[in-house]
Each structure stands twice: as structure tokens, then as C-alpha cells.
Length: 53
View 1 (cartoon, rainbow, N blue to C red):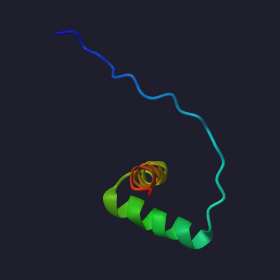
View 2: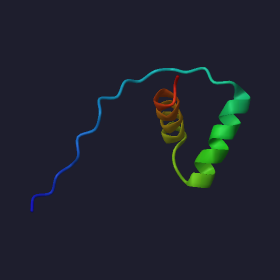
View 3: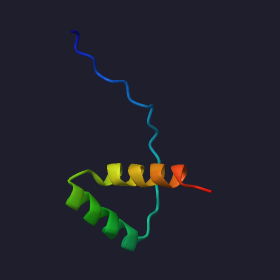
């Protein structure tokens, strides 16, 4: 069996201005779940997109 590196989705760098209170909440979630701040934000965005009306 050949070792394969999965292809990731093309990523684009963007700058977001997030209110300080929200940043603190996201940092707490990231620390608790032991994942990066970026990963939390991406998962929140995906959740919001998939649950939009």
C-alpha cells in the first residue's frame, strides 16, 4: 500500500476583525478542545453556513 497525503481544500488568507469578547470565547474553546484558534473559527463558519436559513 502506498502512502498518500490527502489533498486539502485550497485555502485563502483573510483578515477578520473579531470583537475582543468573541476572541476570548474562541480562545477558551480552543484551549478546552486542544485545537487551534483558526480551527475553531473555521468549524464555526462551516456550522453557520450549513445551518443558514
